[in-house]
Length: 275
Image (tube, rainbow, N blue to C red):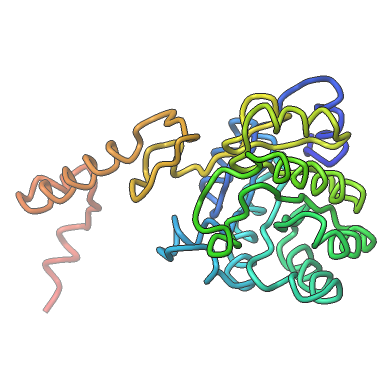
């Protein structure tokens, strides 16, 4: 059965943890879907891990639509969420609604995600009023990395912790169906999760959240430019791929690939009649 907003709410109510991974293409969507990952996030992190940018700020709405369409084609059961990229919702609620509508209409995804707390509550409310589920994202918000002074843990002081809780309440009141908590002290994230009726999805926010999300290239050891503290590598797929690429190159150079089994035949009589 297709995972829906209702599914996620029931999972929180029953204490069943939610799994979410980033996903940017059809092949990975198929693999993750078959592994029964509940949620696939077409994140603007594709700017770094797919497109090679230093930050997600250069990712465009068209980039997100292009990748989300591929993910949706591969996800038969998972709940697909698409990030709203930088400057596609910050101006006002009308801008946010128009761009969220494009993401849903053109990709077939089930929800959009945007960063921010109280300040973007009007945008969340406008999008939800149009029937589009919204996942909020608070704590460390990568689109504000320059303002935050880098990728730092958020909510460590009393004032910052209170603001995070206020932001969580504000986005829930605006209609968010789930809240991503990024780089937040574990005890604070657990308290936020207890206070909300909608699921929290943690990334660097401890085990007290209702679910967890990771960038798939990080958790498979494929993206080595930077490894956050909160990443656990569940396999060293990057090393395996590098070895395979090197072996392919070697066999091509020495002429041992392709072998006869990898080739097609033609009738010798056809060849003999060529001129």
